[in-house]
Length: 476
Image (cartoon, rainbow, N blue to C red; front, side, top):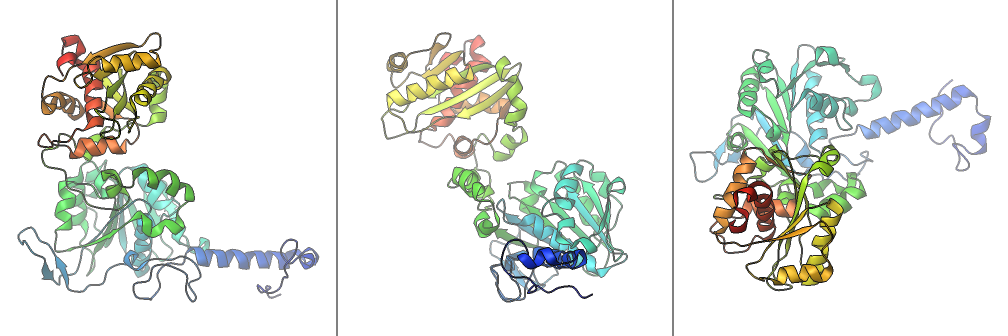
């Protein structure tokens, strides 16, 4: 019996309305299968042949599909900026690495998976390297993830993932092998035709990973690697961008909003857009470290902590709320930072800074001290003298919270350098992402004349927690 077509039912209650209930099980199963096959066809739809397509549905491409910059670049002469040339020069050598540096949610993972799918069509004997930060990242994101390698195939065509052998075997005989940056020597020796490297900028052993996988790309006439990563200022990424054998593709989170959950736009994009971190993570901009800055995003990221992991230890911490009060209302922000210390580790727990009236910043700081269980309110008293203490007292200092006024008798650099050293030693962790604070930390230099209010509050809190027993806090 031939299966029913999609016009074999009428609108109504359930599939086919009243007719559906009278169908025999075989006919119902046939229709279900046709519907599932069509949904799979649409879900696995990818590139079209329209030039500069934005991925919107058109013609037989009835679903969102690949945008033009998600398709592999052609082998055409191109302009590159090499290390020895101040202006771009034209090169015609075939590309080896396709470096995709874009914002979160742009579609990097799906693009990498589709690249591997296309290359694997060569068939038996084709060898592919799947390289992630950790073995878990390769498994959970690159292979089994929602946009991973298995997801881009229909169920009947899906390759066989063999976790114990660290490989994916395709139905046509091609094989992909899994590697992690934790063990870069795994890449020493194996040869490949194709590679997919995901989130390269987050790797440890970055130089060894890159050199080992490049030396292994020696099979076939045109070995190719796609590198999908959020941009970060690392030396190896900088060198890769300037290589004549690299094609660079950029993109922003905003290009793919139609495929992202509304809550992502509401809670994530709005929080970070307009900040330096947002330019990197949302706009996909490659931001070089600011010369002379005492902190880099890479340094902060290395020791970042997760709130859920830190929560059980907060009650045991010594906590201080630091205030860097604005001189005038409506001008500079008032910096308000919550910082905790447990043994020799510091944790930046919250940034509550903002434009406040004196009464409002005092109330905000006192509420933070109460809710976080702080023992001290630490505030700079250079500008306002006893005004700071009087303002806090007018709101009502809670029992058990002591006030400590600190005097800035040294320059900002001398105050900040000891705190920067604590970061370099891995002793201070940001709990979650504190975008505006991190913007100030990574862009402020001693030559700047502006007042980094959030950074100043951070320095007061850390100086109090780490150095006050040496008598340094009052002159920090």
